[in-house]
Image (cartoon, rainbow, N blue to C red; front, side):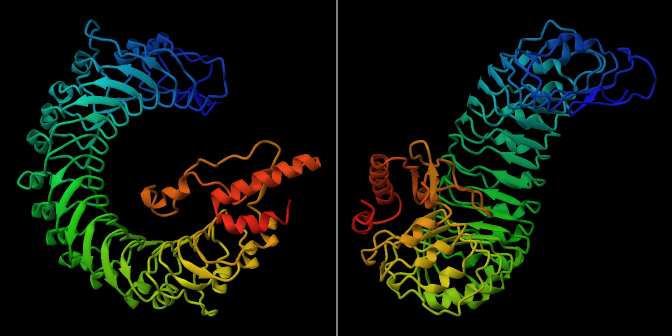
Length: 545
């Protein structure tokens, strides 16, 4: 029999009659969360002597993990007890006898397990190849014995727990280890030199810990198979070593939110398979022209947000034909955008804010050619916002934000053509004239900020017909869900103003004159805090009181 159940449906067996424990080879009981009578995992499952694969994922199973399953003598793949409510501590299984066919794959991720990892337990799992214990509440130090008794160990995922202390030097003995994920813990100390002896590593993720020190340029080339290096969100310092160019298989580089500095090494251009470069939130400086971006034909995301880079955008960046997300904001770049940026036909996310770019009219005309652009956050100080009605080409744009730029003139009519717009931010400029009534034609718009301008003191009544203006029987609320940008899913300070933003207007349905009066008062307060200036609200609310 191949499986007893699959997604709650019975599977026919190859033989007639009842299946005996000796004939069951695989049990799949995943996605039975709707069966409320499932309480825990029975140790009797270990009596299925020929069962090799057990899947119990996505249920509401509680209780602990029966140790008999780990050393059942038949189960080699306990692939999924993930996404349940299993809890407690893992028992010390030193008293159990190791079976002839020991466990190879164990996935206990996304449960409620806590406590320390008993080292003796992992010494017993001599044939363990992959362990995923992520998204639990394990604590203490990471055992260093994984590879001592499991010479074929390849995958270790302990991310999203509460492990502390240093990275164990014993992981350097894992000669076959390919994936090491220990992000989102409380690890401290430096990267041990021994870790670089794990030369089979393809994915190294230690992000969001409290690691210190510098990247050892002499040791990095030993990780010749590395495709993903994620050290984001630590306290690392120093420069990116030139030796990083020897990681010929590197595809993803995350070094954001550290304390690193210096110029980008030209050797970065030798990592020709790079798809993601994330260096945001550091103190890198100098010109980025040293990197030959034209050799990075696979590059899709370049994030240099919040550094001290200066100079102009190098022409070689426009050779990255696969580029979909480019964030250069909060640096010291200057001059005009090159017309070549219009050749980035896959570009969907562009953020240039808090720099010193000039000629917004030219930039808007150039960006017309980026047909897939969905996010545009720009910065052009003290210029006139273009009013050219023939501006088109932003049919896919969802977020348009040009704030605190001291732009003058009226809100341009061409913005009315952005029919897919969801967020429009023109805050902190010197825009004049009325708020145009055509804004109500932007049917997808849910966040509008035109505050801190010089607009006339009138808000058009037409705004009341906008689809995002909701009527609820309960009190007004704030939508606290973050806005996930369609291309570059990385909420940061730059988009923090949208993270807990209210809808434009949100009010209860008035059933009586008194309720209507209270509604108008709430409406006035909400608009004042959400999107407009107080003087605008005062003028508009007088029409409704």
